[in-house]
Structure formats: C-alpha cells, structure tokens
Amino acid sequence: MSAALAAAAPPAGRRGHPLVRRIGGRVLALLAVALAWEGLVLLFGIRPFYLPRLSSVLGAILATPGAYAAGFLRTLAETLIGFVAGGAFGVAIAVAFLRLRALRELVFPLFVVSQTIPVIAFGALVVLWFGNTLLAKAVIAFYLTFFPVTVNALIGLESVDPRQIALMRSFGAAPRQILLQLQLPSALPQIFVALRLAASLSLVGAIVGEWFGDTTGLGVLLLQAMYNENVVAIWAALLVSALLGTGFYAAVAALERRLVFWGAEQ
Amino acid sequence: MTAQRSLAVQRGVLGALLLIGLWEGVARGFALPAYVLPAMSDVLVGVWAKRTMLAEAAAYTLAEALLGYALGALIGIGLAVALSLIPAVRGFVVTAVTAVNSVPVVAYSPLILLWFGIGVASKVVMVALAVSFTLFLSTLAGLDRVDRRSVDLMRSFGAGRLALLWRLRLPTALPLILAGLRVSTVRSIIVAIVTEMLGAYGGLGWVIYQAVLQIDFVQVWAAIVVASAASLLFFGLVGFAERRLLFWRAT
Image (cartoon, rainbow over all chains, first blue to last red; front, side, top):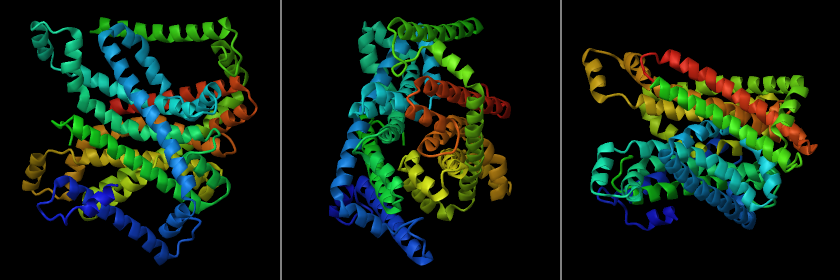
C-alpha cells in the first residue's frame, strides 16, 4: 500500500513531502535488497537449499496465494488481539502500580521472574488451558507484550514533573483529571517506545503459539515447510511474516506520530 | 532510603510467598488435575525426583546458549564497530540487517534446523543470530551517542579514527552494550529452548517436548522451573559483571 502511495506521488524532488520522500527511500532500499538477493544467488550459483532465488519464492507465494493470505490474516488477528490486550493491561497495571506502592512491590518482582519463563514451554500449557483456538495464541502474544509496556509506562508516569502535579492539584484537579490530562499524555512517548517493541514481540507470540498445533497461520506454514524440507516454502512464509511484521510496526509508528505529535522521540 | 529498600525486599518476598501459597491452595483446594495445574509442592518433588536428568538437560541447554551467546556477542559488537570505522557501507548494511530482523528470530528456526541439522549446531546458530541482532543494534546506538564536541576536541589534538574509537566511542557505548548483553542472557536461553523443541537430541526444550507428548505435566512444570532458574542465574551473573565494569556509574 505504501509502495503504491509512493509510486503515485509526483517524482519527489527536493521539495517533496518529507514522508513521501522517506517512504520513497525505503522502497528504493527494498528494491536494492531484492535485486542483490536475486543477483547474488545467480552470480554465486547458491544452491536453492540454502537460498532460493527471490523470484522462485515469490512464484511459490503466487502459486497458492490463498494459503498465504489466510495464514497472514489468521496470524494478524492473533497478533492484534494479543497486542491490544497486552498494551491495555500494561498501562492499567502501571497506573495501579503508581497509585499503590505496596501492590507494586508485592507483584513487580513476580512479573520480572515471569519473563524468564520460556514462552514456548508455557505455550504447551496455554494451548491446553484455552484449547487449540485463536484465543490461546492471543494469550501467548499478550504474555510477551504486557511486561515491556508495564515497565515503560511506569517509567513515563513517574517522570512527570511533581511541580506540574502540584500546580494542577492547587487548582483543585481530581486525581482522575491529573491522570488523564497530565500523567498519561506525558508518559505517551515512553509508552510508544514499548509499544513498538511489543509490536514485534506479539508477532513472535502468535507464530510460536501456532507451533502447538493449528491448521492455519504463518507459524503453521513455517512448520509444514520444515517437515517437507521445502526451503522455498520456508522462505515464502518468512517473507510473508516480514511483510506482517514490518507493516504492523509501521502502523504503530504511524499512530505514534499521530498521537505524540509534539514528538519527543526521533 | 535503606529502610524503604528493605521494606521493598520484604514485600517482594511476601509477594512470592503469597503466589506460592495461592498456587498450592488453588491446586489442592480444587483438586485440580495435573494437566490443568499441578500443585507447587508436586512440581518441586518432581524436580527433585528427576534431578540428575534435569541437571544434565540444563547443562546441555546452557552450553548451547553460552556458546551462541559468546559467538553472537562477538559478531554483533564486531560488526557494529567495523561499521563505525567504514561509514561508506553503513547505510546498506543497516538496511540489510533491518530487513532480516523484521522477521521474528524464532521464525528462522525451521530454516536453521534444515541447514544445520537437529544437533547442537543449529541451536548455537539460532542463539548467535538472536544475540548478534540485539548487540549490533545496541552497540551502533551506543557508538552514535558521543558528543559531537568531544569528537571535535579529540580531532583537534590529532586523534585518528582508531584513537577516537578506543578512547571515546567505546567507553561511551559501554553502558548500552552491557545493557544489550544483559537483555540477551534471558533471550539466549529462551531461543535455545524454543529451537530444541522443534528438534533436538537433548536439553530442556527436548525434555519439555517429550513430557508434553507423554502428557506428563508435572515434568513440564519441573523443566520450566529449572529453565527459569537457569535464566535467572545467567542474568544475575551478567548483571554482576556489568556493575563491576561500569564502576563509575551509580545504579
């Protein structure tokens, strides 16, 4: 979609819109990588077992576009549910931790330990608990997502200037108003740092979750290709995963530019 | 300050005890079957009963993770440092690395397993891949963090590129590099276990996979407990080394 946008735009010279120019630059870099891929394989005669030509990988996707589209949508749904739930839970818990110091000291160390548990081990249990459903994968994505959001939201909420809080309080602002109008907006740049990280983590959760048995999804396509020792199909699934990963990341970054228009980051 | 800190530690311990109590109480109270939630005490008994097998598996996984970790750290830091010396190719390499990195690392494991077989090599490569990405990006960010004026000052005294790197850029980058090394510890063990579950001859991931197949969920939990303990140990060791190396920085 962004490629079409850049192509439709007039040839961006020095006066092109900065966003269009940046997307144009990305597209050029992508084309360069694609050409280098195809060229290097041809030039060095790399065996398809190690690296098939990009054109044959694209051909494999175009041969059965339905399977890849279905896998893309399924994994996207799992990723999105896990991401939204993890993000909302992370921010809510951070607010609770901010208000209740005792709760924070009680629970936070457990959160840290929970992050050392290998997801995939946990994955076997989650699939058992929730059945082999979309929900089970979303829960794994959620599990990977909430922790970085909690940590960063807490850092952001705590870095609000206490004088600003005192000022709002002196005008009679309720704690709710202080939270909604001062603390959360100030924490937003920091929260988005975590959300960008969470965008890729939730995709990991969705893909790994699918390895515990499912019939559609990018993780399933990867695993099936491995069992068939079909390297071209593995690369095809990887390429579609890359498309999903980059697209999702770009969407979160775009939302960040929209919401954090005053732009503390970048 | 210290009183507050010890209160925080007390509450942390209390939280852990509460969780264990809750877990034990729920599992025993509702007489939950082991495949839903085995009691904590059963899990610990399971760890003790299978201690030699679990210790061997943990050693196997730790060896893979450590080897891959060292390899990945060397590659990631080395590549970032080399790029800072040859700025001409930087744009291309960063684009290529970002492109490869846009796929979650674990998604590469089917490919790596096909290429390197289901022995130790594929796990080492996967861990090295994951760790080198993290360290490449954090080292590059760290090397870029130097103050322009410090660079100008050193240049004006006739410092060359290597002197700048060794005396200014690397020390400035050290906190970020060490933070990357710390984050990578837990990740390296997780990646090793994930790859083992897709195919291996041994290790904690293999034990978990076998236990799932045999529907032995006490053993799944026992292996999870051991894996977490191994991660925490590795994390703690690197954190300790970090505090030693960054002695000039207050935590």
